[in-house]
Image (cartoon, rainbow, N blue to C red; front, side, top):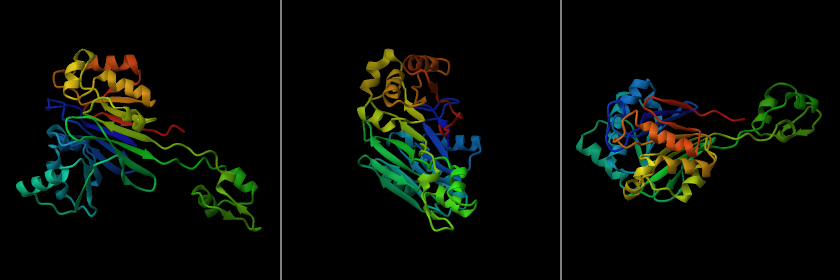
Length: 306
């Protein structure tokens, strides 16, 4: 699994800093979190197979998080797409998509399915993982998202299988898939007889445009990569809270509370040039050492830990 930073800026795009957008690639599937201005430029630059985007998750309908969406929808019409494109977001995201299609007279040759979120809970899922939305505290309805994989089967021990009379072949695969099998002498071998303890999956959490909330730490708990807004430095805490945003230090404290493995700061105020962003990184690292600045074009691998 990999997280591609397509844009790390807030409020307005800057040279070399597009507006907030992160693409998550998992086993060939692509999921887009927010779609700020310049998203399609970043996709082209990274040479990603953007036509495989399965779903787009919008945090809220402020312009710096959705202005890239019409371009992505039109771009997707330039390729053969057989599967629907799902868009998830807060109330009025459906109105925004429909109005954009109508006013811009978009040519869309695939199905778009828009689903509005009103409360916390799973919004997208497959056999091996799910994506959950949870409410944040901003100036309008806003949601964070977590992709979490279900635990994986434990390590397979072939020597145990052979000792129990299960010969190498298809039966080994069935045991690894959690199925019981019969040996030639009629005895039953269970998966737990030949597998080690279950192994954890991977977890990614995306949070932006919010005051610190208790539920963020709960939702992000144990995340391998926690992408979180760190828009301002500590000296501007009052201004940040007036606008219902967070400081880098507050993002770091959430990372500590959630016991995440890595924090990626994002959605920086345009008041900071690229050099001055080090202030945000330094303040975060004083609280949570494994903090990094998300930069446009950066790739963050999310590996299995066991």
